[in-house]
Length: 227
Ligand SMILES: Cc1ncc(C[n+]2csc(CCO)c2C)c(N)n1
Image (cartoon, rainbow, N blue to C red; front, top):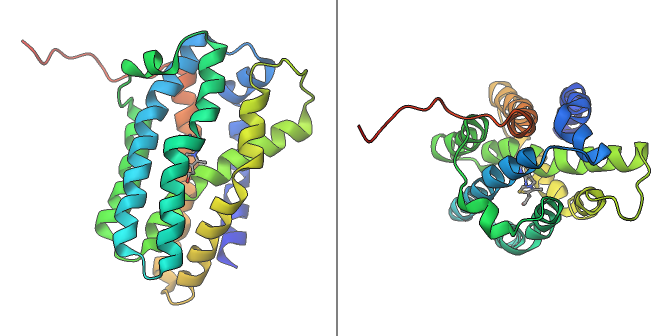
């Protein structure tokens, strides 16, 4: 199956994400508050666009089952995932709404979401966009699973429930995206299948860059636009 190959392709990148500063800071529980804030600011914008991408895929979907799945994921983005964000907001002692007020499209988050939009606009088959989106639940599930397998957390660890959330709630999302990618790729040329693989690998690298973006509090250069 194609997705078995995708999983194999990205294994080294996922190991790197695990050892990078952001996840290690969460595991130790001593990540800088400003990095958590930076992440939440970028992620709130990212998730709103992610939901809109689901909405655009609804128009392209060829079965009611896929439409239902997409609607469910939109609901999850608006309600469910805020639970994970609340955990992070609590750890920095600030209301979530206040944190995200000052959000901006920092460079790595900006690049990632445009990778997804490119596939929505340039490619008719939804499998192209799904191959760019699937690392999103897949990487979070995999990282959470690795973290919980390799570490033991005290009950009052500030980020324990963040990892538990992504370990517990991602399987259905990943399975549906993988099913669609496998099914559609059955009728694709080798050249298009290579595009699916590249999309998946690049989005996994985007996930790594997104966490690092928060770790280094990445920003665009400041250039005055009001002068
Ligand atoms: C940069 C970034 N990547 C992945 C996720 C996690 N996530 C976002 S959408 C989604 C699936 C919803 O269908 C999941 C698991 C995140 N929060 N931020």
